[in-house]
Length: 147
Image (cartoon, rainbow, N blue to C red; front, side, top):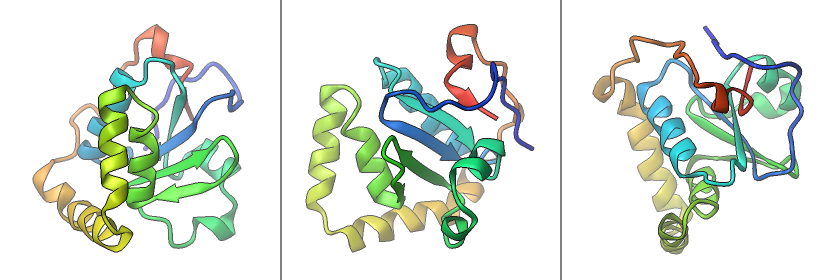
């Protein structure tokens, strides 16, 4: 189920990109809330993996092999996954998180992705699915979420 209130067709505005997330995952919901709270310039937009916007912006050939957690499509159309997506997001938030992203970049990608995959594998056991899978978005955030 992909529940999003949107004002119309997707138009990716100038910014850092769109974050696709698993709408049935409590950890993914928490990650989205984390980014929204710290993205002071509203650079990121959000849409559910597998939703209408995802289907339209990510070609079928590129969808194969993507994780079912967080996928980031940059404003230039590049798809980032796993730790690369996390670092990209962090380095575009407030200065403290930007530093955290830069520090994480020092860790070899294989190690970062191993940690990401470990958390992704157990996330549904540790974080049960949200009870309100379709939260009511405040008016000021609705334009940042796509179907």
